[in-house]
Image (spheres, rainbow, N blue to C red):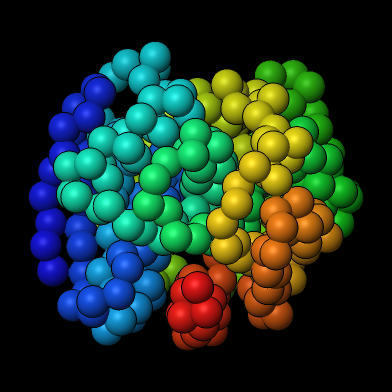
Length: 285
């Protein structure tokens, strides 16, 4: 395992490379915005075939945490990914993005960078307006009292209230992570998300986009990504299977896979199956 820091606009970002295999490296773009690489530890199993490159985006995990909201834009994070590849001499890579990481991956790939061999969109959010529509449908499946708390808090501008946050947990348990307990590794202080980055770019909750990503939509340009592509989601995912499958049809030849026993985090909910599917796709590429 190798680890270190790369200088980017705004500070230094932490990276970790695991694995001794000789095949093309896989770089992992974590979710959030403001998440960390730590939930993706299952992907270290791919190291027998290829290096797996994890990193914490600026403001997250073991990377620097500058107090400057002007840094929290998709274009700066896209530049950060370019800088990381350059610094680590990752001339050829596969890319796996999860959730917000799929927005970052798409924005990066639409610039037609050299050397990318394939892309995996895990739990994709490629249109913020479509994501909002899907979550509006999901909210209808919550208990009536929870729906009322969410709607009233949003209407009254009290999305930081304890009541709203407790109601959010009901949604998250159903559509984000259905496990009863978090893996021990996620108890680390370095696994905690940066709420300021999340709030600035996305909003107060998964289903209430109000940040600078609220109009993000690349569905009209996905056909420009001329790479082998895999789209995945869980059966109970907030990234709805219907929407994820529809996205997959926008990239010529793309594949689709649904994890039957997962919501939004199959790398935690079905880690062995998640690794198997990713391994099989990469082998096919």
